[in-house]
Image 1 (cartoon, one colour):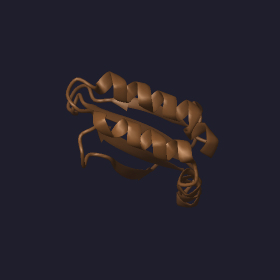
Image 2 (spheres, rainbow, N blue to C red):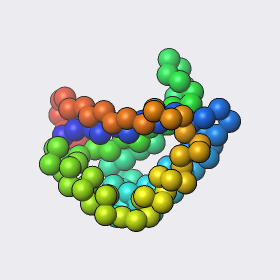
Image 3 (cartoon, rainbow, N blue to C red):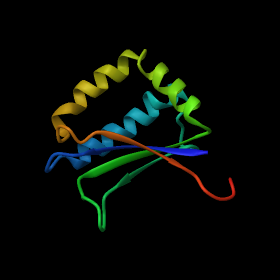
Image 4 (tube, helix red, strand yellow):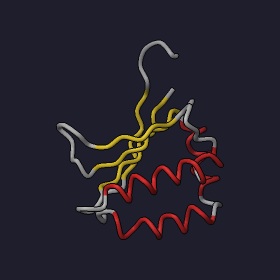
Length: 107
């Protein structure tokens, strides 16, 4: 099992808008590629992390599953529009993906 983490930083004063947009994305777009409440969560920076950071974590079986989701995501017009609508609220250059392997017993 793996955790794919997408991270962005909100521009000063726009964290609430970014969180709202991420929640809408998970419900309206992420659900179309199999990312549901059961395998995702949203996080924001608190202690030892930038307060402006907003992250989504998605649990996937392997890189093949993640790649299939990304391929499908690229075909969804609503995702392209959502990205354009989000752009004014995020710090340019901060979006990034990190992928981690889960260690230990699977739940």
